[in-house]
Length: 272
Image 1 (tube, one colour):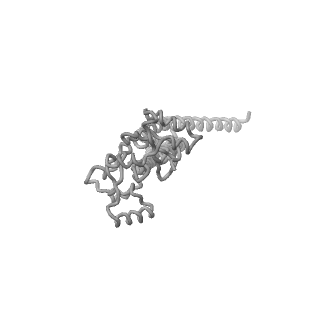
Image 2: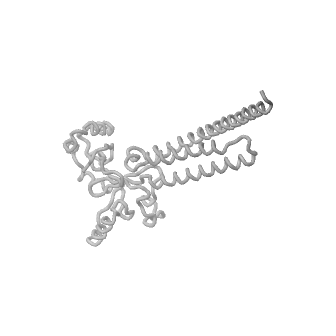
Image 3: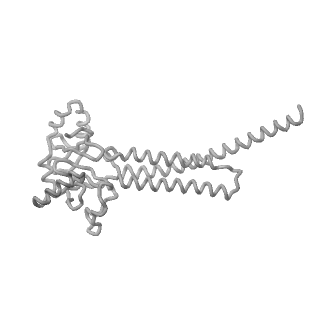
């Protein structure tokens, strides 16, 4: 074999060896990054699904899809960028700078995603006239809150609470309330209308409907209704229901104890 051919052959294998080594190192680094990102995502999933979006709120306000989008992008993009920039032949300082930049970008994306999730989290399930309405942090104008008063004026971080709304105090307030509702600001979105759920229980029991009525309205969904009854831990004779709505869905109901007005379970059934 000619000498130049041998040299070319040797150079070819050497270059391929370098490429293979670089690819293996990059994949190893990306795998470690993926493992770390997955561990962080698991911790965030606990925060999101156990505290901020317990059932059925992740369905009612879209917490699950938002979480999967944010975490999916973060978990995939971080390791992918690591695989692209990682090269063991780079100077150590340059490699550290590149990997630090990847981590900063991933951390910034994660913080923004968590902020978005925190704004989408349900804070109150509010009884309003003839239904329960799920209110998220984003539904409330911060300037309407008075955190110094404490109580209901401080939006909860440990899962949604159940509260009620008061009735209008006079004809003028009723007309103003009507105008606000037409503008998309319902009583459940007005902190100055909120009141402890205990003060609304009598109205809840007055408005609550018999389970048999729900069965008659939805003859093909008895299985969902029966499951919600089992989840409540009560006999059907001690249950009633009201529609449960959010900005995203009108097709849920809340089952309540017909003696105490406490919410016991939920079902994905249209209550209207």
